[in-house]
Each structure stands twice: as C-alpha cells, then as structure tokens.
Amino acid sequence: MKLVWARYALSDRDGIFTYIRAENPKAAVLIDQQVASAARRLLEFPESGRIGRIEGTRELVVPRTPYILA
Image 1 (cartoon, rainbow, N blue to C red):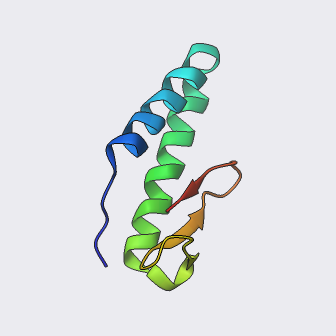
Image 2: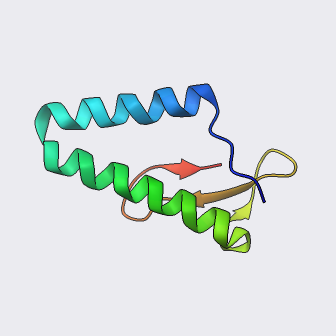
C-alpha cells in the first residue's frame, strides 16, 4: 500500500494544528502525533482500516479525535 497525502489533507492537518495550538500548544502537538501515528498504522496494517468510500482506499479513525484518515 502507498500513502499519499493530498494537498487539501496537508492543508487541513496544518489548519487543525494551528487552530488547536492557539489555545493549547501541547494538545496541538499531541493531536498531530496521533494523526501521524494513525497514518503509519494504516500504511503498515492496511486491513486495520475500513474499506474507504472511494474505491481502492482504506479509512481509519484517529483514536480519541473526530478525524478520519482516508
């Protein structure tokens, strides 16, 4: 499996980090680490994600967040 970050996904990730950092810098770092960890998990264990809504993709909910990696 290949991991590809779409431009909009990277922009969303940066926006989430910036928004959270304004209120709680430590939480922003933690959330960003959780997103990165979930992305690595999906790459290493693709079956851990559910079948994606887009054909040929997988999706994984980032634990303890409202975010889904696809």
